[in-house]
Length: 508
Image 1: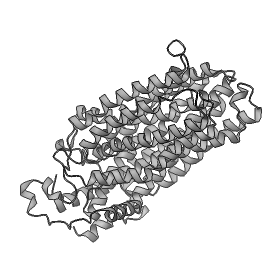
Image 2: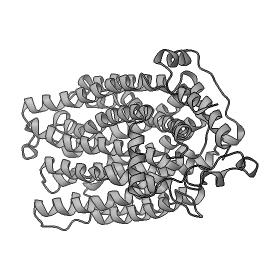
Image 3: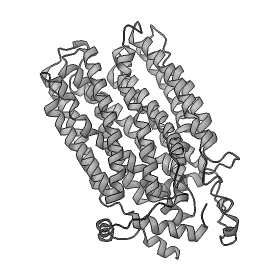
Image 4: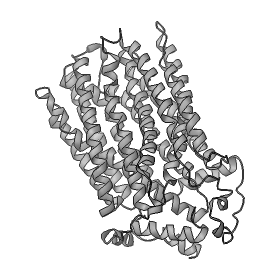
């Protein structure tokens, strides 16, 4: 198959792609392409650590407002500014990982040392001294957060890239990402209770002391669990793209032409970065992720205020407890969603599975208007299982779809760039989180919310909070569905790409 023919795989029109989905081709997973359950679980532990760190620094930041009285807008900026540095550090780490040559592989050394560094820095970040000014706390936390995210990137970017290359099979990738997402969601069984834990007076004298000790627990856990994927998982592509032939069996090496040596340094990095951003199927996945995740994250912290000040009239303790139950139910529901969407995607395709999961989450957001009720607080639980379809489906499907994109990219460029694709994708996720945190603080101010008023917030403030809590994620999710409508890689196309790759460079 010629290179021109290979590129036609991407150039099919939407009508052809739709026909493939209506009459999908199914391929059984070969025995050699399967990943053992133990390996899937170990990779999933990395997802647990990844989600725990992200949820912890986001969820615990509320104490800067409730415990130190910091302006919500400043708290939002503290969440956003460090993430902006990821615009460079994430892709750079991906590039470094893609081009690393070591006896331990391209990914594992960074996963090992990154987990240790991230755990230590996270513990230190929350050891805030007492009696300082708002300006002092802002700069202390800002500098510490930037250092933390650097360490976090060293761990997370190679871990993500490792998952994209563990299997070449279309469906086994979805199963791997399903297990990884399942394991990762366990972090959200714990994180909704962070606020309640930090202010539990039988354990801690105040919320800031609670934050210090909780950070120590999270940091130690990160170190102990985060290093496991580096120790127990094996890489399929151990060499950098400059030496792909070294990964092939001896009987296939002689048939593979030697690729041109890639340019070294920043020029090669920026060329790869631009090429990744110009790859249309990947951009569609990034856009959908940004919209769905950003919409969810914006209200995930915002809804604490709706629950506390609208449903429970300012009762922080009771509001935090119910918010914890909502989060726990969401996490449990997501486990079920992951199983459903994993199975569904093998029947109707990854794209249609995304439409269904995101559509159900839109219904759940709309239910909030009726179920967030001061008269019937238990109704808070009802929307949670439906909303769980949003992120449950998103992160089960997107990782698998990006792995397919990496194959198509290799067919066109001759390089394995999981690190670059993964870093840019997860930077989009982090950017969405940062934008949500930053925007959430300003939106909260715009509603007229004043923490000093406690349960005496104005009626117009509470109404505005409720509207923002629902409308923003609904609109974002609907736009995301539109973005994925033209995503071109079906099961049949992915199979053709794999055959073309194996004909071109053999089987690793």
